[in-house]
Length: 83
Length: 470
Image 1 (cartoon, chains in turn purple, cyan):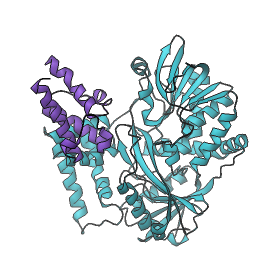
Image 2: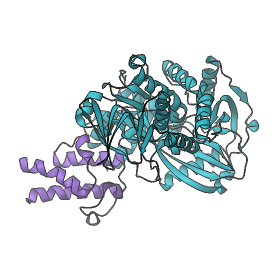
Image 3: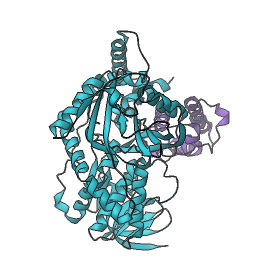
Image 4: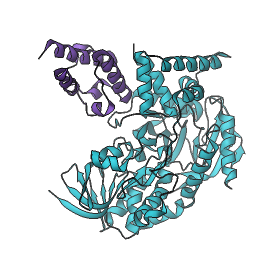
């Protein structure tokens, strides 16, 4: 895994921590977004912040299948490889 | 793998789905219902509903007159046939569902627009030849609030019922009918297969059907495979998440009592359920995705209890809690329901009823069944899923909605120093306009939210979204 990829995973975890108010190191890959109390507005906020910090567009239809941090990081990976 | 063949699959086991199945069976069709028969029915709007048959009391003074005329006309058509429909359900199920006549609407100082809204409600009733009788608040049985009501309106042609009993009665009828199969599961996906629709269920069964009625609330259109969804071309659906509760109270309540609509929600209301139990409702928060699994938050319950004890009856604070419910009311971007045939001739919708699903269920069932048995009869209906929707611009909604935002922020009992209410309204309006026109992360979030839900109920979320980005 590249440093770049690792960096993006950290960004996803950091943003989830910001939105949920939880410490980043307590959020593991299997943590569900719903367990962090993210409602539909929280998921939208997550998408906007991820787009801003990674530069990768995250349309609604891609984000709708994301349930866990792991799902989110998987979603970010293909773009990193093709970048 | 189980495979069945049927005339019509009804996806969804809320009142709209069950009423449609009941109607289709009466038209000599084989029906398969796919939806939870047992379990907690998390998020189902029908079981969390107050179930007031509100023909007029949902009217707001600033609603577009054409919309009021259309909606009241359709609700009145539903209300006119309701007793006869309940009798049919009662006879077939041998379970009588009692209709409690009348609804009281009260106005007080917490709703700055209550007076004008009560008059708009009365006018809508009188325009349609129905009674609307102003009375003293002391005449309203069960009303003993902290804040004194200044007027009351009795609507004898509205009514209320227990939606759980109605769901159970319909379920009894359908389960006993040999032409109805009920799969106690959910639809996982739908594809076209030859001349049929192949409806795959989560339990592994597949049902081949000539027609499909989607009555699964805000999650309805997500059930279709992408190629089919493109042909169906259903308008977007969102949901109004509502928390309600049942409580055992030490006072008698012979008829429902409600406030007019307030701050993007339906105000406070208490509805008799029999045996000293009342229903208290309800919150309304727009969800742009279906998050049915989210339980009620303590804040939502606290809001209900606070508002009801302040505006309806102070003894509610000491009432015994029986149950808390969460329901997602399906709503379209133009707030009108979706009944009938879609862009695909075999796929039909029965959803989008927002706060009037219990009232509209039998009316919807008739329209949807007509779309199957007499295809050309309903294509021009104003609730057709193929109608054009005229959606407002963000700036127009901000300009018209900040008064409601201040209502929502204050809640019943919250008060601002004289003159500051207007100041706060103007500030919020200016701030939201400025942010929306900008390039900041908050502006991006705001515009994205707006694209997803261009409707007035989005305004509280805009405020929330701006606040969440620090």
